[in-house]
Length: 184
Image: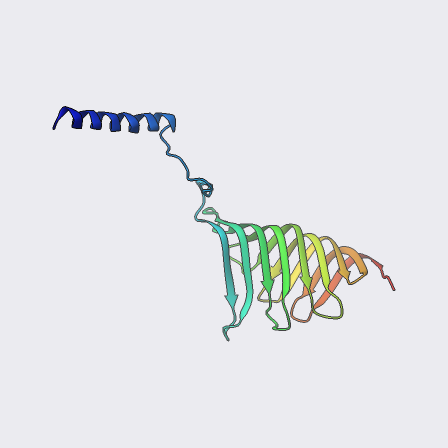
């Protein structure tokens, strides 16, 4: 090898060492790269969606989330920025949105929390339900909460505490403290 070849190798080796020292040895993340997953996560997905179908192949519900992280401790899945389209009855979808969600490994439930909305365009006027938490049981076609609930149907508003929503027949039932405001 000539002295010029040795000089080139020395320069390249110096550049590698310098870049390693400047970057503290971890390597640079590409611009816009996804954050690294939590170390104790079973799996970690971003911009995830999945669906459940019935025996006839029709979509019962579709869940989309900004992130999905499985906990190895209990095998549950934690979701962030959740959007759920639920259409088991085929009569038109219920749309659910929440800041957070959780799907326990051992049950067929979807637990939503943080600014939960449940809405439907079916009927004479759009229906919007607002609450802080909601448990959706797709098998029973039921959504329940024990929290305060606000229901808007067109210009009308009803509030109460606790609710059962029978999603298959578009029926909402408040459990207690029911108060309403009906605008003609």
